[in-house]
Image (cartoon, rainbow, N blue to C red):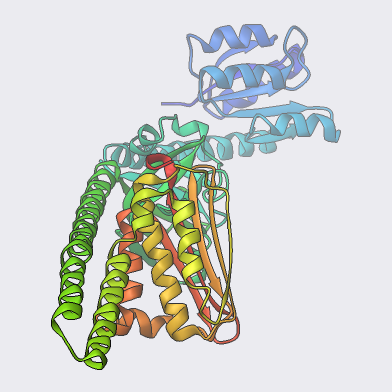
Length: 470
């Protein structure tokens, strides 16, 4: 069946010449039209294989504007006829992606070769689009997210499942840059660089880690990420095929497990503190009183004054020691006063040590009551470690509540320690303090960062979300 051609030319002589040449070459000329409006109306009911369009036709639309309107209706290849070769006209025409230009006057062979090439190119493009459409249909029915990005990480394709996940339309974010316009971050909202794909020089990158993809101010958890070098839709450029799953349910499960572990750990710590309080009371009220009775009986029953004085001194020392143990187990001030006062009293007790403590805080009276014991114990443990091992001269303790974050830092100018060794020795006695601090921070859902070296001492920084405590 011969290919059909529509001629849009307002010059009758040129139009007749085109018709004769095309018919002799066995092309079917559907119509010869003289205006853009006629061409647009014609296209609504007819579909020619090719349009030969004069750029400078008279009427409401010139040839370029007519081509733009036709392309909104149907995908039909266009060959422009023009007597003008100025750059402005050519640049305008390029916006409509014409198959070619023919400058007037043109030869018969030139016309026919351009028609043949335009028809061949359009058919090849249609076949390519058909293959792409088939591939897109397959990918759109995959119940996983699929994104294709180029070497600059610009999005060239994303399937419907991905668009639905991001609550958008796929055409909206084409050309957006992954890692820039659409950012990637870990669960702590720390940005991740997509450029690592190039740096590792691997054909495939895979991870089950849950991360966030951030789009228009919202965070979407994803996991089971697989990134492969590929060539889709454009065989000449390096591209990456990125597949991943919606991790909303996985994240909720992970957060639930973390919360359960945190609550379990908090319950264990609370139980230990309750036991400390019980033992403290027993020491103070039970053993302390018994020692006082022994002391009174010693004075009345022992006749030798020298022996009596020695026994009384030993008993007094035992009473003092039991009071110290009781106080360490559960400081009386901690049960009565607020966190700030309790910490100030703790620092006062360390005044006899070889280091000076500088304490600054913006915590007000009565704040952080729910986690008062945990913070007190963390600071107490840190000071004990400094006293035993650091050989520090100065210690800085800062406790601040800012923007829903409780920030505690304990810094000294001592000799520091090997953090890696300490972490691998958490089961040994000399590392129990570090383990206790970490557990208490975890029980509050916080993070702890420890930096230590022999030149600058040790700095412990703890951050806790204050929403549940302030």
